[in-house]
Length: 90
Image (cartoon, rainbow, N blue to C red; front, side):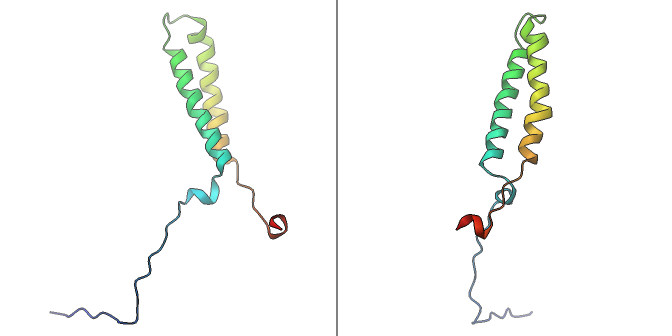
């Protein structure tokens, strides 16, 4: 059996892990994503309104859902956070 040897000079260093999204996402991205989720829920609500051939169910809901899936969700992912330089921070 092998003995485990512990080095006396190496203290444990705790690392603080940051979210990988904090590098890319800013507050604007989260706001656009939240707006997309709210509009998505609203679109599906309009889609479920009875009767099935109502104006909200046939015209309004698909327009809202298409906007959410083709504009808001991709926009929330693709907008990049502005890089701060030393000149701007002074």
